[in-house]
Amino acid sequence: MRRSQSPAGRGGDGRCQTGSRRQAFGNLKAGNARPFRVSGPVRIRLEFSVSEMADRAVLMPGARRLDARCLEFTAEDMRMAYQAFRALVLMSRS
Image (cartoon, rainbow, N blue to C red; front, side):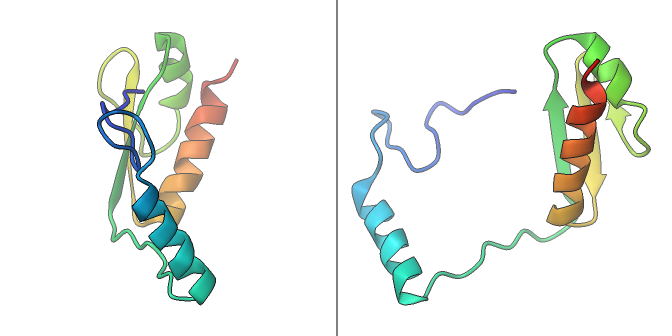
């Protein structure tokens, strides 16, 4: 799987953004943290290290092959996307 150049919560230099972290924990402690909601549909893409893993995972209904090592799956909501992700990873194992 690909990673972004600047991971979430980190500045361009790789250090954590302390102010954002403090604010987030402060909101959580005060009971002001709102749940992060993802509206559906949710599309996930998986890139496996070898094509044989994708060969096994594509057997899941709804999975679509993008290339030799990549699959895509669209779910109704985040819960189903997470369950599909777990199933695809487990199916890819030998």
